[in-house]
Length: 321
Image (cartoon, rainbow, N blue to C red):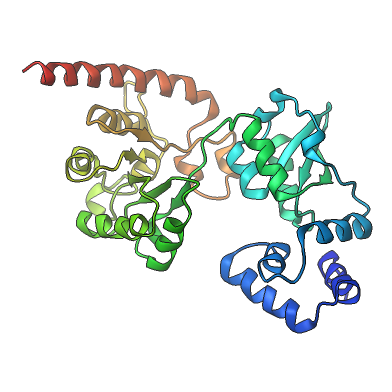
């Protein structure tokens, strides 16, 4: 059986850091439970310090280490990789040549990251090692080009332990997607699990409810609940027209169904839209049929702006009555 890099690192940890197989097994259990990397699990358990682990990686993998606090990052590079991806994988781009992008990362054993970045950027990826804390700090100093939030998907709408965990972190807001088959009040109660743990920055997302009454759309569009959620709660309301409609179809006037539903949500006062775009929907790993093309983006935003202007006029009219 071939020895993987992970196996090699574990063997070295046992030989040089005084760890036991029981320590490794305990860290692997925590890794699987929390969905974190093995090195994070080892550090949370107190089995190894981050600096010692990175020194070991540098030596064993022959990958250079960089101190980001002493490195000037080109602000233009912050657009190369979406910040959500950068924070998820703990990476930051450092330099870009014609066909190669150099990044700093804290977990070079995660080979899936490299593959994802190749697909996102279309470039070869070179890596150097840095600490998670320095990467987070560098991303913040780079201006956080896009917002980051924790999303609770519809299939986890009543996963109460997950909801409480999301509420225990206060760094990022939480986007809660209404369960596809639960009542509005049940969804509100689920949001209470998040808020009760300390994070009150919860955004309520409507994404359609499961019913064949909505055919041929993917779900029955619940856009009429936009003003209801705003009236009954203090939560900002997001609407997801992509999952509601589920298809990239257009009417005879060539207006996409997704644009029609987006307009309905905006005219009803939605604070945010969550829309799928993909450069090649046929190659999308999920939800390809509902993804709009990148070329659709400007026209889509222009259409949303028209509707938003109309909503502002309606609001002004109501305020004057």
